[in-house]
Length: 169
Image (cartoon, rainbow, N blue to C red; front, side, top):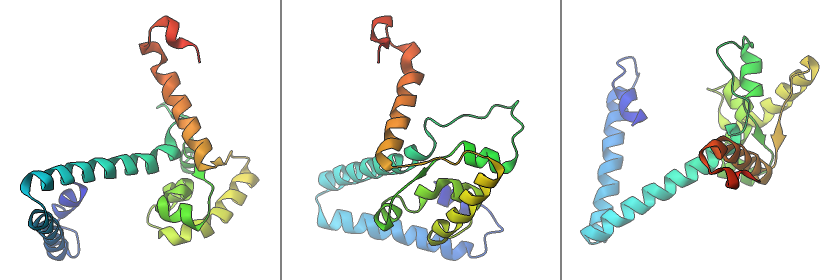
């Protein structure tokens, strides 16, 4: 959907090319799908594929923000603090970088949204050191710990909706 919204922006440099490539991608994907599979199976495959892709995207986005402090309108934190204190990085290696698409460097991604993903690892050293100098908490955890923190936060947020006897953790 964001691709279609972007096409509505007349300032987009290569709008016709972007639109053509988007249409071509959809046409080729659906054509191959319906040529290779019977219609019912093609629709089922499309539904499963999109569902799994959504689950994957959720698993990539969740560890970076869920369970982190939420800023209110009364908070007057500067740009750096808003980005650093409401995000967490996921520690890993080259494999983590690939699986999470560079979003494991969420703090740097928020500070420098147009920076290419391969450079976020390099920026991390500078940002972490600068945060230490300023005394700004810089959170980086493993993927497993980040999921635990996110799930704990969601569990606590849902506590008021559960019956009283289920509130024990």
